[in-house]
Length: 132
Image (cartoon, rainbow, N blue to C red):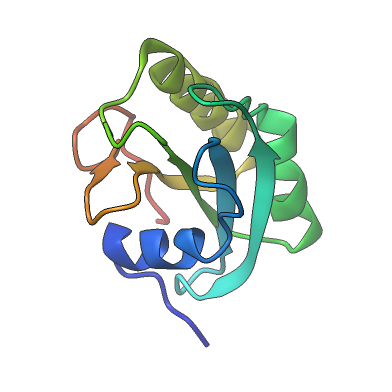
């Protein structure tokens, strides 16, 4: 059983799902209470610089597999992992939806082909969530 302990592990799993590095992909990792991966899923695919991640599409797989937590990831084909304004807005919307549904939003991570990635949680771009 795979356990997600950090962003690097989450990115490694997400990179296996990417089908076209010239487009953005939104990927959800759905976790149990011990951070074991229950399910990974491609949530959406967009264009060169946008990928729509609707809270309903992010939460649907979490509800189906009874996940306790979610790590949302998406790639930036440009190689620049800095979050855009729309990335920050999406993070806020999904965080609110998770709180309403009682699901922990563990992180939103932006990554590229290389080793670089940006964790919203580590960079204080989302409210702290806890499993307590």
